[in-house]
Length: 243
Image 1 (cartoon, rainbow, N blue to C red):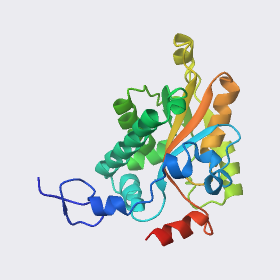
Image 2 (image 1 turned 60 degrees about the vertical axis):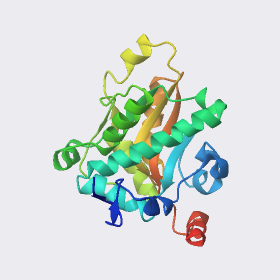
Image 3 (image 1 turned 90 degrees about the vertical axis):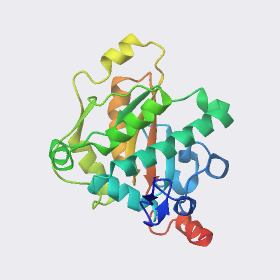
Image 4 (image 1 turned 90 degrees about the horizontal axis):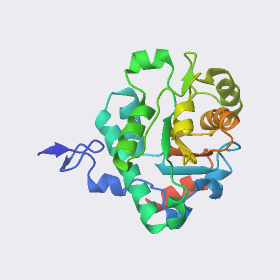
């Protein structure tokens, strides 16, 4: 098929050409560790008092930002499939080369909920789309009706303190949450909250806190496609040097 790259629009046999893919800042277990909470430039920046593991595909800089934006705001489900495919590859590589990670692998995926208003305008929850693709490829079940997000406001324009207050107000667990899944599967030990972009960690931490209070026996990790660094992050310096 004669396809064009989603990023540079040049002819490409894949949705993203190998030149653009090579230009993306992917996090690697070898350089950044398999848990980014232990990697200073990320761990020091995100709030993570209620979850103990973070796996992110890439740094939220150009050109992967184009995929994220297209997926969230331009109904480009192909962009979402590309992100999910890359993330699956990352997890498979970790499981193969890092045995200790496979022993603590996610057994259930919980996508970050979207407000009813946002769902009505976007027509899909991007986190749920990602979770379904990733879960299907890795044979991990997902649950989409575990939490509720109320209100109409978005968080991308808020500061860290505002995000914290906002998250406390808008999220709640559904009455059933994952009660039946926990009761029917005594071997369930680790769950992963799935999101597209992690910036301050406030959203996933608020959700993890609710889960931890209800299911204290479970280990909670976070899977995200990109991490947005603060303006003076050393990751941005490294990114510029690499280019």
